[in-house]
Image 1 (cartoon, rainbow, N blue to C red):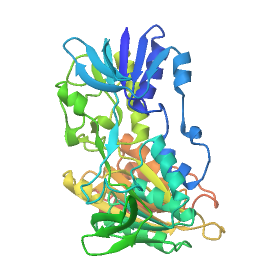
Image 2 (cartoon, rainbow, N blue to C red; image 1 turned 30 degrees about the horizontal axis):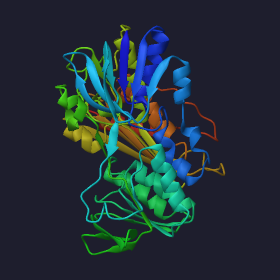
Image 3 (cartoon, rainbow, N blue to C red; image 1 turned 135 degrees about the vertical axis):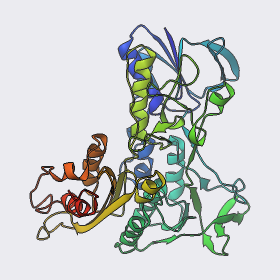
Length: 452
């Protein structure tokens, strides 16, 4: 069986390895326009910060290791067309085009950084996005010569880069075009996160919200400053655009494959597309939200790995269903953790629920422990049914464990009443006598229609 995979960072690499394990005699070929395969792009901000010095630590598996396992790896290969009628792809490698036959095709083309239309964006050195290994290497190298860096975008990558630059003693300005940074969270949780950053021991940064970058300016080819529509101007030796990503789906669209939300590739639970024998997985593929059952696009590396595995299994005839995502995510910046899962309050309203919430501000462990720190936890449930819908937490490292607990409850479709009986662990170094999660459930119980 000829199995061809387009893309090989997380989903594609996982799919290739799984196919070969399940079907050792399969002829597996990977085509990617990247210079590396199977690496952790999520680790790039921490490489830039200096948590480790060798970028090769981000590589999960090298091309040589794939080839030793019988998998053909073609780097810097441009897939020009998918031809479903003849079950071929047209590939250009080293300026030579060839048709490659497939029995099953797995599309794992991922996503690319979104670059807004800003005057001067293509005119100066020192303007970067962060997605690939080379991006991380180039940013880290240039960082050594910077006194001022501007980050455009206050989402996960922007926040993680803020920490990276600040830890390296570089004055950093973060500009965000929304009222709240980390705007995927409910506003009051985002505000708590920002306040923790701004009251930390670090002072060599500033955050500006409700500002839209309008122009990059410089001298000759060198970037010197970043301007906003409101008239502000910030000195910048380097600027990083962290304005989100867009799915790479033009190949699929040109091949007549049905697209879904946000122009992602529509797939079913088996990761099958609308075209026979073609699968899609990872950041280019549509997801289903486990709580709402509705299509969403939440591109995350952890999801890409699971989808790649599932696509591979179905491609070789082993049944696997991918149930969907909760949008579970976590980040760290300047000793503060922010984590979330499921629906926020605003998302619950939009989805048609009647949300009730409980927000608990409490120490993460018994206050007499020297490392105890305040944590804010918000849990969302449905008033009518008592069904748990989501959770968000901001606090010290470890706040995410409460969110992970709620994640399991969402997978099990537990109600507030059912969760209230949870036998959570307790010891002074790890939790208060009554865990903040259980405090939240007590509050929610009084708000549900049934008063559990």
